[in-house]
Image (cartoon, rainbow, N blue to C red):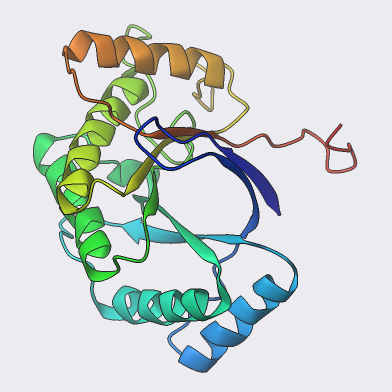
Amino acid sequence: MFVVLLQAAPAAAGTGLFVGAAENNARSLDAGVAKTKMDLAARAGLGVVRMVVLWSPGRTTVGGDDLVALGNATTAAQLDGVRLILSVYPQTARSAPLTSRARSEFALFVASIAKQFPSITDYVIGNEPNLNLFWMPQFSANGADLAARSYELLLARTYDALKSVSDAINVIGGAVSPHGQDKPRSVRPTHSPTAFIKDLGAAYRASKRRKPIMDMFAIHPYLILSRLPPT
C-alpha cells in the first residue's frame, strides 16, 4: 500500500490526500477478473489504484493486450468509484528514450492512452529514473548527470503531448527512488533523489522552457527495513 499526497497545480481543482495501492491485478484480459480485483480494492477502502503500462521503442499507439486490459480496468474502476493512476515507463533501462525520435514515440504512445481512455487523467511519467535499474545511462564519462538531463527532455515532450489531449490531465513527474549513491564509477551507478532533483531543475532552467514539465512531483518514500513503522 502507499499513501500519496497530491498537491494540485493552481489551475487544478483542490488538493487532497489519497490512499491507494500499486496494483496490476485489475489489468486483466478477462473483464470479470478485472472487476473482481477492483472490487477488492474498493472494499478495502482504497480510493486510488496505480497501474503500470510499459513502453518499448517504436510504439506510438496503445493496442493489443494493453488496450483490452486497460479497457477492462477502466470500466471496473468507474463502476467501483476508484481513481486510476497510470505509471508509464520504458520496458527496460536500456530502452529509455534518449533521442528526439524515441521521446516523440513515447509521448505519442502516452497521449494515445489519454485519447482512448479520457476517464484516466493522472499519468506518472517514468519510474525511478535516478536508478540504473530503470534508466541508463546515469552518468557521462566525466561524471555528469545524464539521466536527469534526458529525463527532463522526456517530461517536457510528454507534458505537451498530454496537454494537447486535455488540459485537465495531471502530469506527474519524478517518481524517484529514495536511495542512490552518486558514485559514477560504482558497480551500480545511481543518483540520490536530492542530487537528481537538483540536476533536473538545472536541466529545466538550461532548456529556457517557459511552460511547466509536470503538474505534480512524486517520490517513493520506501523504508530501508520493512519492520520500521511509518513514524
